[in-house]
Amino acid sequence: MSNRGAVRHAVPVPAHSPADRLGGEVRAGLRLEVGRLRQRESRRVFDASVHVGVPGVAGTGFVVRAQDGPALDAALRIDVVSTLLDDSRPDWTTLWLVRAGSPEPYDCDLAWWAAAGTAFGMHGRRLDGGFVVTRSGWRDVRTGETREWVRLRL
Image (cartoon, rainbow, N blue to C red; front, side, top):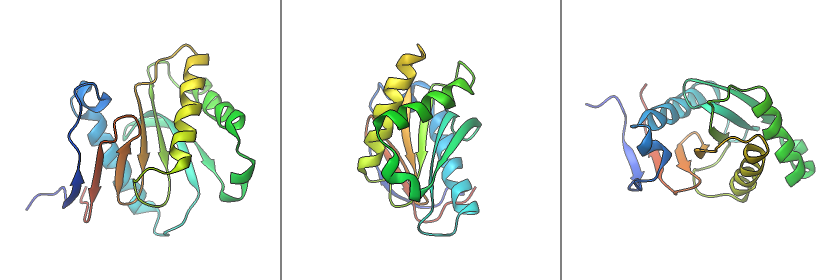
């Protein structure tokens, strides 16, 4: 029996995907992020967090409290990502959003992706990938590639 658990849904990876360029290291890191989220968070509803770094390896993050959600406009999201970039290594070119729900597209995913594009551009850094991590799996915001697990064993 595989230690990866059951894969419920998979979308083929386009050749231009960051996960493909990095030889699956990003996929493995995102899988690890899903596992860590499952270990530390048992609630169905929890505060989201946004991270810059290398999924599963290292990163810097910011917790977005649910009560602050209405105050988060585009400019404030750009400021948050920009501050994360100020505190990060120059070779960190990936952003991921950890949130409740399923990996299906939510409006907040696109709002954070837009903010990331602007903030990375302001810092003169390329943005290689933007991902959403949930308790059930992850999704690449750019390509739509999705991985979900019923049971995930790390």
